[in-house]
Image (cartoon, rainbow, N blue to C red; front, top):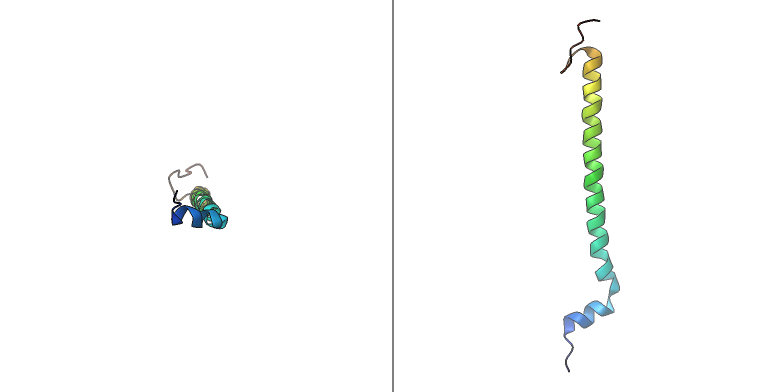
Length: 62
């Protein structure tokens, strides 16, 4: 019976197996945070544009 070197080396180093999922999870979380920040920035710009009357909804009653 032969054991391949790749399976025995990964079995000896459990950090290699756990680092990749953690890294991917952090990348996904970072992307989600960036989307939230971009959305918030757009909402702030839209609110400011409405307050000043410059934007999609021009307030003619003021």
